[in-house]
Image (cartoon, rainbow, N blue to C red; front, top):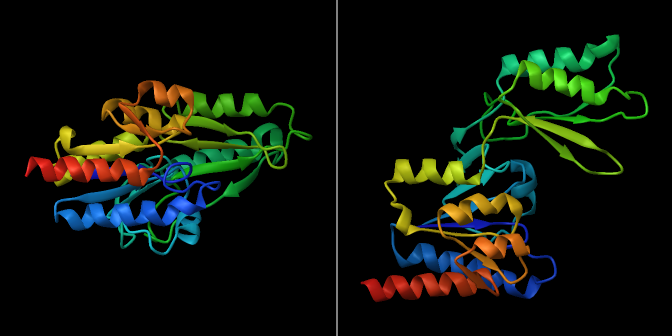
Length: 243
């Protein structure tokens, strides 16, 4: 079986520190229940942010970062990546740096992984210098025109508004891939999340969510629970009953 758990807002909730150790214990119990049981953490965080801030007691078999752009094993080996190619990076930077003949946008995100020295950037991030670049939208429309398959995501931040360009991918894509290489059938996949970037995997795999999740996520979830540990205990109970 495969248990897929979102990190921020699901496994780790800032206002619920008291439940974290119980959540982590439940993941360890799931892995220990059977050698075939695997745990995958699916997060929108970049690799550095996750490994620098994760609880040291957190164990998993696979880690999906950047909302499904890169899949790692626990030893940080890259299993699959859906990254922007070096050729794409070069052409995009040429457009950005010399649009209207001036360097209006400052490149803010370089390679964000220690897993593989040869790995290309999972996504490109640019700080928007709105005060000196009123034609920012035109620039990115030109980029998307050159690369129609890339996804352009804005990051609303008053101090540092950014925009990210990346190949289309999501958490569900990495679950599908992992099930294929591990030979896991869909009925043996259990997912839990709380945010919009979890909706696709929850819907496809009839996953669960938390009472604190967004109403739109609760509406599509097969069940709702107070915490990850409660959900995992129910999975293990059902697994024992099937034996």
